[in-house]
Image (cartoon, rainbow, N blue to C red; front, side, top):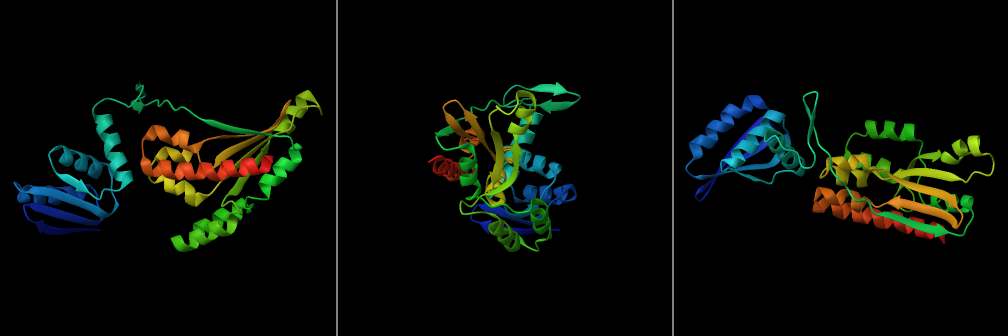
Length: 266
């Protein structure tokens, strides 16, 4: 359901949109904008909860015609930009057309953080595992789905994380696979997926692709010079999207993870 509030601010008409907007509302909205001209027209989107692609295209068209979009949420703003890019026949990086779909390539420079420990492999793994939560993942996501509101969801997550505000989603023992070919002398290699769903959503609501990078990977592997603990910095992955809010969250996550690795290595 859509509610439209019309406000006058000097030589400006503000149309405050409240609720869900879909294509059937566009005729009415277009008429209200036309009636308000030649005054400056602003669309206040602070209370918009849901839109569809036709609405997003409408917002983009109106903005190009001089209508100002105020308090536009990051996800709507990003969607408008994607639609405008697609309609112009251009993509950000290297566009291709496959089966009628627009395919874009984005080049991302990754910073890899690594610290070497003289401690035995098992001690390093144990040092990390004592600092992160280990919920039953099936039960955890059942509790997430059954949460009645966001406060309850936050409680579920906060109960699951460990002292470092992180939890382990899965551990992959790559060393087992290596030993099947190389024998008992093969090095130990462990991949841990760790993170915090609340931190993830703080990035994803600004940069959709952040969902590809969270939870993060910690690689623990034995080499000639010691046990290596490695991690691809989230900030380096997010930087290419040029979103300050997501980047700030990513940097804070890097601090958590890198602090965990340094402490485990010592």
